Length: 295
Image (tube, rainbow, N blue to C red):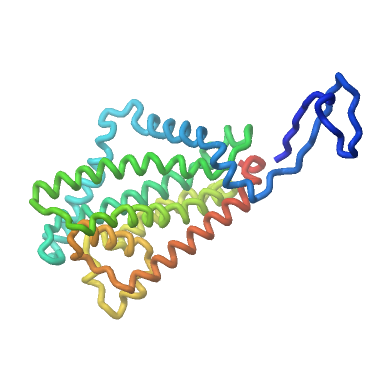
């Protein structure tokens, strides 16, 4: 970015050491900010991040009849459908005598967090074209500001899970202390591809049609309505390449007293999360300087 500073010449010294004529002004044109200042700029614009996050929260529930109830209705209805289809009709087992409803809802929490983050953040840059084309700020603020709404919805759904556990007289043990680790893992699993899709969506708008497909396909190949125990052991390392497997089974391990299948076969999924986060962040930073030109 080019910054122009106008200051009285009487208080400045020119580059060659000469004193400028008093009473006049001159302009200093500084070079663009380097990559080393990128993270510092994010901190400098933290108030903009808070403003955008608050705006997204109010817009989500403005003129809505049910309001925050949508954060309860979506996972609740999905849990009922999955419990009936996989638990009653298909007769799939629940690990360790855990109530099937609790097992499914413990998986719905990270799944809805992932899908909401991916859906909202991937379109955040293309949807902020008016602001991006007029002022400078780190564009990384847009997708991360969108994530606040998803985290609020997640908190509401987590409170509903606590109510269900009380109703079923099923309480987690000490493993629940590790739940924040898997929450961060779920955010990282979503934000990696979201940053990549957000950057691509600026130039190629048809990428917005890919996001719903990814979300729908991911629901079918992830252990949301069933346990990973039903997957043959010979295929678990391949199945573990799905990063949501590690996230979902990690949630179940924390909330279901360690009854979930959480072994070394989830390590490939953790590698995929790290790779996607690095690729998404690197591509976003490399292309964001062109957003204002093509948006």
